Amino acid sequence: MSIRNILFAVAFGIVSLTAARAEGLRPMAGKSIDLGGVSGIAYYTVERDGFHVVATLAQGEAGTPVRVVSVLAPGQRVVLSTPQQADAIEISRKGDSVLVRKANAASN
Image (tube, rainbow, N blue to C red; front, side, top):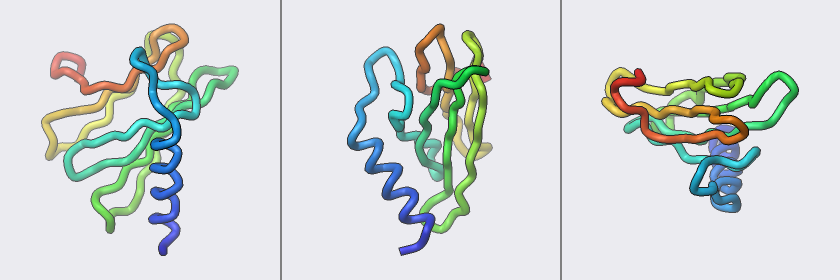
Protein backbone atom coordinates (compact mmCIF):
# COMPACT_ATOMS: atom_id res chain seq x y z
CA MET A 1 0.00 0.00 0.00
CA SER A 2 1.39 3.41 -0.97
CA ILE A 3 1.89 6.25 1.52
CA ARG A 4 -0.88 8.19 -0.25
CA ASN A 5 -3.34 5.31 0.21
CA ILE A 6 -2.35 4.96 3.86
CA LEU A 7 -2.90 8.71 4.44
CA PHE A 8 -6.33 8.58 2.84
CA ALA A 9 -7.25 5.43 4.80
CA VAL A 10 -6.29 7.15 8.06
CA ALA A 11 -8.10 10.35 7.05
CA PHE A 12 -11.28 8.53 6.10
CA GLY A 13 -11.02 6.51 9.32
CA ILE A 14 -11.00 9.77 11.25
CA VAL A 15 -13.99 10.98 9.24
CA SER A 16 -15.94 7.81 10.02
CA LEU A 17 -15.16 8.01 13.74
CA THR A 18 -16.10 11.67 14.18
CA ALA A 19 -19.45 13.12 13.19
CA ALA A 20 -19.92 16.77 12.24
CA ARG A 21 -22.59 18.67 14.18
CA ALA A 22 -25.51 20.06 12.24
CA GLU A 23 -24.30 23.63 12.73
CA GLY A 24 -20.78 22.89 11.55
CA LEU A 25 -17.54 21.07 12.00
CA ARG A 26 -15.80 20.38 15.32
CA PRO A 27 -12.05 20.93 15.74
CA MET A 28 -10.08 17.95 14.36
CA ALA A 29 -13.26 16.30 13.00
CA GLY A 30 -12.80 15.46 9.33
CA LYS A 31 -15.38 16.37 6.68
CA SER A 32 -15.47 14.77 3.22
CA ILE A 33 -15.17 17.12 0.25
CA ASP A 34 -16.33 16.16 -3.25
CA LEU A 35 -15.67 18.39 -6.25
CA GLY A 36 -16.54 15.83 -8.90
CA GLY A 37 -13.30 14.12 -9.94
CA VAL A 38 -11.39 15.82 -7.12
CA SER A 39 -12.14 14.78 -3.55
CA GLY A 40 -10.61 14.60 -0.09
CA ILE A 41 -11.16 15.81 3.46
CA ALA A 42 -10.99 19.01 5.50
CA TYR A 43 -10.50 19.65 9.21
CA TYR A 44 -9.44 22.54 11.42
CA THR A 45 -7.53 23.25 14.59
CA VAL A 46 -7.92 26.18 16.96
CA GLU A 47 -4.71 28.26 17.25
CA ARG A 48 -3.89 31.69 18.70
CA ASP A 49 -3.90 33.40 15.30
CA GLY A 50 -7.20 31.86 14.14
CA PHE A 51 -8.72 28.60 13.01
CA HIS A 52 -6.25 26.65 10.83
CA VAL A 53 -8.29 24.93 8.12
CA VAL A 54 -6.53 22.09 6.28
CA ALA A 55 -7.98 20.51 3.12
CA THR A 56 -6.24 17.61 1.37
CA LEU A 57 -7.54 16.87 -2.12
CA ALA A 58 -6.59 14.53 -4.98
CA GLN A 59 -7.94 13.62 -8.39
CA GLY A 60 -8.95 9.96 -8.32
CA GLU A 61 -6.66 7.22 -7.00
CA ALA A 62 -3.63 8.19 -9.09
CA GLY A 63 -3.74 11.95 -8.53
CA THR A 64 -1.07 13.71 -6.52
CA PRO A 65 -2.57 14.97 -3.24
CA VAL A 66 -2.65 18.73 -2.73
CA ARG A 67 -2.90 20.29 0.71
CA VAL A 68 -4.48 23.72 1.17
CA VAL A 69 -4.02 25.49 4.52
CA SER A 70 -5.87 28.66 5.42
CA VAL A 71 -6.10 30.60 8.69
CA LEU A 72 -9.61 31.95 9.21
CA ALA A 73 -10.58 34.80 11.51
CA PRO A 74 -14.29 35.27 12.35
CA GLY A 75 -16.26 36.11 9.20
CA GLN A 76 -13.64 34.83 6.75
CA ARG A 77 -14.03 32.00 4.25
CA VAL A 78 -12.12 29.96 1.72
CA VAL A 79 -13.67 28.53 -1.46
CA LEU A 80 -12.38 25.36 -3.12
CA SER A 81 -13.34 24.70 -6.74
CA THR A 82 -12.15 23.15 -9.99
CA PRO A 83 -12.53 24.48 -13.54
CA GLN A 84 -14.37 21.31 -14.61
CA GLN A 85 -16.94 21.30 -11.79
CA ALA A 86 -19.73 23.86 -11.52
CA ASP A 87 -20.09 23.34 -7.76
CA ALA A 88 -17.62 24.74 -5.26
CA ILE A 89 -17.11 24.04 -1.56
CA GLU A 90 -17.05 26.95 0.90
CA ILE A 91 -15.40 26.62 4.30
CA SER A 92 -16.36 29.60 6.45
CA ARG A 93 -15.93 30.73 10.04
CA LYS A 94 -18.93 32.19 11.82
CA GLY A 95 -17.81 33.18 15.32
CA ASP A 96 -16.57 29.98 16.96
CA SER A 97 -18.14 27.68 14.33
CA VAL A 98 -16.72 26.38 11.06
CA LEU A 99 -19.21 25.53 8.31
CA VAL A 100 -18.53 23.37 5.24
CA ARG A 101 -21.12 23.66 2.48
CA LYS A 102 -21.66 23.97 -1.23
CA ALA A 103 -20.88 27.52 -2.29
CA ASN A 104 -23.55 29.36 -4.25
CA ALA A 105 -22.58 31.10 -7.47
CA ALA A 106 -22.90 34.55 -5.90
CA SER A 107 -20.13 33.85 -3.37
CA ASN A 108 -17.49 32.72 -5.90
